Length: 396
Image 1 (cartoon, helix red, strand yellow):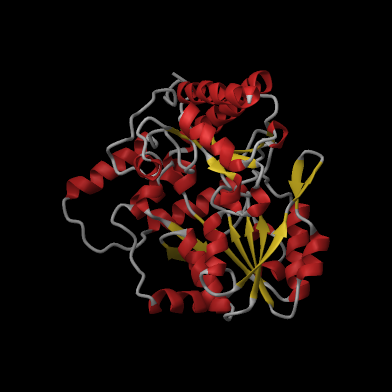
Image 2 (cartoon, one colour):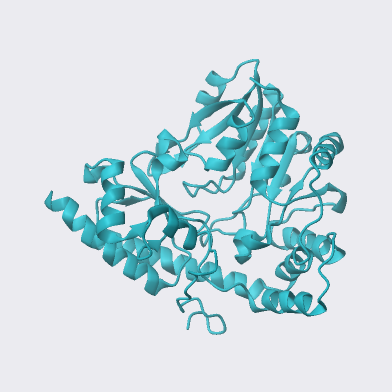
């Protein structure tokens, strides 16, 4: 058992639960023998206090309409202060069930059809779709691979901006490449938005998950001038493995922006979290610090194990540094094979599914995204299977 009190090693069968990571992917690929390392949730049980709170809510027996309570607000504000040194006011928090929905709402509310929104690529698909499905133009600004890690290209951003550019969507930490942007990088983005009068929407859902020695800096800690044009989306769902509760929220310091978002949420008739959401989030933020720290340690050990395995057996895969998230971004270009060929080998020979790079736009071609938030025994089995496919590729 890892980390004494917490068991991250036991493999729990999630099939037969309508699980998006396992059942849905089985249906997608038509194969129930696959190991799935694509979808970004954890194969670990959530902390025991959360499970206890769910039981308490269920035992009450009445599942009526529910609002967020003080337990949620106090828990979240306390967590942000303790973990990220950010002061948040209760009135700045706006409930929205999913960050993907929040992004779409904000793009629709603050831009017009045909206007432009900047997005760094490779990019998390739903952020791209929040722009494109609102009939706005995606201005793809490719991240640059420099000295073995990705950086934002401010010169390219300056060259791409036009009078139609109204907004910038930023993923921080970045999914899929795993960067945790430094304060200097975030300040540069903030100054860019001030200079060009852009609204800055930032997805911070992975902000609690960082590698040892890496500090996550929230954009909420930047200058008041940046905060005036800032909307931040966050959630406890990645941190505590509770995405099934459908809970996220926006932090909007600008009162005028906040009023616009609230009106739009009211217009589409979206209100009330699930009956479990407030109690679960409040519990997560106030009673689960030990589990959270143990989880980070286990993810780090999985990261080290993965790098050692690939370095020894599949050295053509270059694994970018993981500063944040529990996702690894891996470059396979040295293998000399096309994406479709590699995916076929993985699915048919290895019986392992990962996310291929073009899921994150064309700029992701030549890479895969691999989720390491699983028991180590499951990862080892998946890697052994991948090694079989790798050997076939090398022979051919």
